[in-house]
Length: 181
Image 1 (cartoon, rainbow, N blue to C red):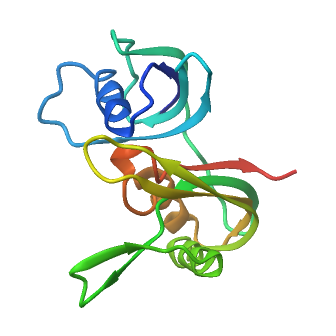
Image 2: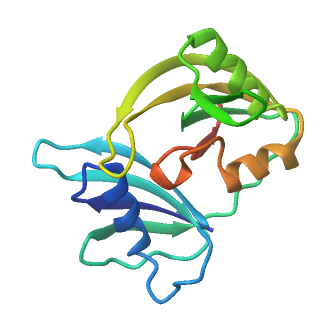
Image 3: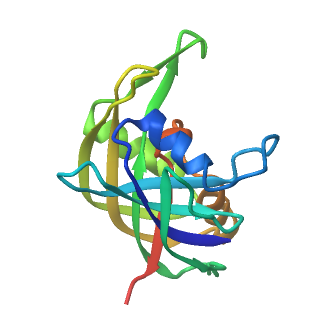
């Protein structure tokens, strides 16, 4: 797996999605095996993105790889990790036929606990981010930060690799972990 910092000139989530795909040329039938999260936005429209992918990205006309390194996360039960997650908390209503955003902060934290059931989660910061898209409606993502203690390493590893929640194509779902000292 690779973790990379990428520069984009796309403020819209759909254009970001297209720019990220351009980093993986000659793979038209491939399923998405990458996750990304916008880290910084500049006044000039430059965006820095953290990208996790199974293959190494290659710079393109619409996205420049600033740094890239291989990484193989080793997660262990009972260990503590700092985490950051930009997610799109939702719930299904009407027998799963309609999906709605979760706006209540307490319910958002409950959603996170459910998604990270392989860990004891302590959220220390929560923030709301409006994500704009010209292809679909604007969405309100939630940035969770905190500390977690792993109780089921395999379950947390799957969340790390596969991402959490909906809208992964638009920059949500990337779980970042760093060992707590």
